[in-house]
Length: 336
Image 1 (tube, rainbow, N blue to C red):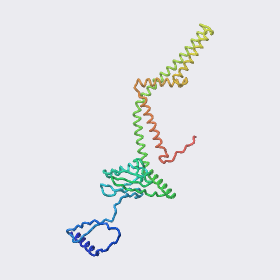
Image 2 (image 1 turned 60 degrees about the horizontal axis):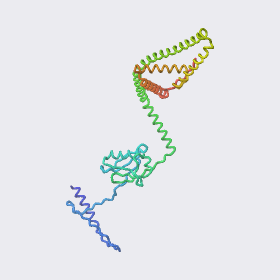
Image 3 (image 1 turned 45 degrees about the horizontal axis):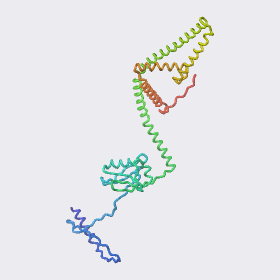
Image 4 (image 1 turned 135 degrees about the horizontal axis):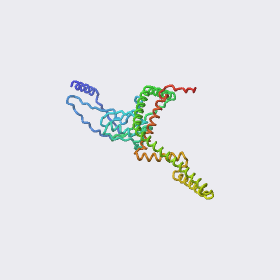
């Protein structure tokens, strides 16, 4: 209360010391009538005081570098104060900026406009937006945002920054790479054990089906050899003991022609040449898949698990490679 009285006394003395201004303005135009200001008399003070604000309201947001990062200071309506947002121009878009504003103040309706008044798409990167000045609209207020000046980096400074990044990378690798490799190796070993457990019953069933298919394929091959032997013996017996060569020659011709037609029919049906090894493999696969469908052996699942196991083994081998572990390479010793 005493401080209020003291301020009133000082203000009254200052106003009383100023002499009244008495002057006559001569002008040819009529002087506009100023509205009278109603003076309020404070009950605690015996003087009249008028207060005026000389600071204009700030209408522009601030966009400048803070601590090496680009910072945007925006006045939020609900908080009545500026809030600082750190931007990542290469990673953030206009939509991300609007989302951050709405997350900080849920009652905000924001949009970004160009200097010509055209709305900027939310998918536009901030790096592209900051090439020119733009307008930021928050509710009914429009703020003029000036793009910061881009600092040109010298060649020596760029080389120094590249060296520093390389040193940081080496330091991070030295500190975290062994731990990461051990964790990754443990994960790969656990995955490999799991795949082997899943493949174990399938491998046993596959081995049984393989033995049966090979046995049946071998039976077919020996049966074909037996048929050819019987055919040759029958032709020889008919030629030398029953009939003469003059009678059997057209028979052998038609048998050869029928064999050629059979080989060509095999090519038409299988789109493969009649090669003994390929024909044997085809017959083996026929018996194998027939037995798999009968014993409910899932061939596709077996192939997928086998491919995953091969990939895990390859990843584990690359992880344990000496260059990855920064170990000296083993020298190839000459054979004695």
